Structures are given as C-alpha cells and as structure tokens.
Length: 222
Image (cartoon, rainbow, N blue to C red):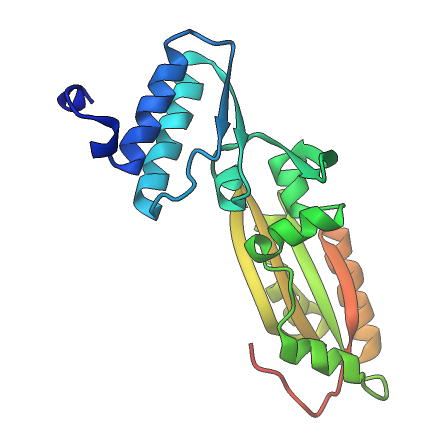
C-alpha cells in the first residue's frame, strides 16, 4: 500500500483500513494477533481479500491468530478451532469441523443452522406435526461425515433394499477441506426393507435420525 502513504485515514476504503490495522499490529512482532471483527461492514469481495491476507499471515509467519466474529462463514473459511461464547461463558469449543458438524449447545446450533442446513422447511414441519397413519413414510435425516461421506449410500439403498429415498432437503459442503452432507429424505417402501436400509446406512458409519412420519399418499417434492 505504498501508493497510499500520503493519504489520510478518511481517504482509505474499509478494506484498506483493515490492511493498515493488520500491518500496524504486526509491526511489534506479536506472539498472538487478536483480530476483532476484521470483516465487519465489508463487501463480500473485500471480505474474501482480508481473509486471504489473514491466512497468509498465519501460514508465512507461523503466527497464532485469535479471530473474534459473529460471522460463521468466516470461521468456516479460515479457522482451525472455535469457541462459542454465550453470555461471557464458553458454551462449546473444539475443531471447527466437529463443532459445525455436530453442535452440542443450543446457542451453537442457532449459529450454524443456516450454514449446515439443519432447519426444516415450515411445510415439512407441518407435515411431520400432522403425523401419519399405518404408520406412513418415515422421514430420515442422514448426516455424511468422515470416510463414509464418499460412499454412494443413497444409490446402494435403492438398489439393495427396494427403498425409494425422496430427497426433501439437502446440502453438501466442505468444512476444513473435509466433506459434510446433511440430507432429509422420505423413505418409501416396505417397513422391513426400510429398517434394513437404515441399518445399512448406520453400518456405513453415517448418522441416521428418524424425524417422524408423513402420510404416504401426499408425496413431497424437494
């Protein structure tokens, strides 16, 4: 930013001011760099640029960076570990992948819900609340993580057990370069076949949760 050396602070953009702040903090050669809301009020392109700079600082200088933010995509993008604070207390902490993929505290679940797509659509919540008879089609949440994330489980269930899995909601993403998938399906088939399919999915080291049942005659569309 040598071309900006004769400019006043008010003449700099938000991203440029953040770069000056980072450079000023690094000038004292700190052991730890504290970054408080480094990307707040920045547009998406500038946010990406600042995050790239922070990653470079961490990698090239081997400097530990403590990043304070309420923006979960920022944590997901560059952090290795995360601690979630609730009214000044640590509600949960651990590797970013572990916390995002399986949040334990309610405050953490509220933070990452949109990011990992765990909130059910209102229409599906209504169908589940209405219940079903005889007993209807089970609605399953299948979470793909770890080694099992790369297996063609859905296709295998259809082929092996004659069970159709109607996808109602789904999201596949990467957290710290590790795959994470979260899909909600309506299982259509004979009850013994569905049970065998659920057992097969669990044996594949995936998580399966039965959310409830929906009426079989009202086929949902993803």
